[in-house]
Amino acid sequence: MARTSEGSGVETPEIGVDALDDLLATRATLLDVREPVEYAACRISGTHHIPLADLPDRLGEIPLDRSIYVICAKGERSRAAVDLLRRQGISAVNVAGGTAAWIESGRAVETGETT
Image (cartoon, rainbow, N blue to C red; front, top):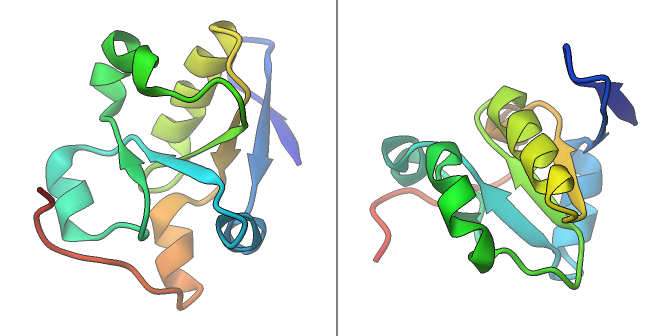
C-alpha cells in the first residue's frame, strides 16, 4: 500500500501491523520516532529509538543496506520520518496505524525505561 504525503507529491510506502509482525520475525529493522516518554511507556521489542526531531542529526545510525520500517503512535510522525529518510536515499517504509494499531491487534509490547 502506498500513500501520497500531503503537499509533497511523494509516494510514501506503507505496511500494516500484520505485515510488520511477519517482517520482524525475519529480523527487520524497526525505527521508533516517538518521544522518549512515549517510548518508555510502551514499545515493540527490538526497536531502535530516534525521536523524529533528532532524526536529521542521527542519520548515521540508520543502516543503509536494508529497508527500514518506521513507527510512531498512529502513523503521522513516522510518515514524515519516512519522507525524510527517502529524500536521503534510504529505503524506508511507514507502519500505518503505528503502535496504537499494534496494541489494538493484541500484540505484545515492552514498557519501562531503557538503558
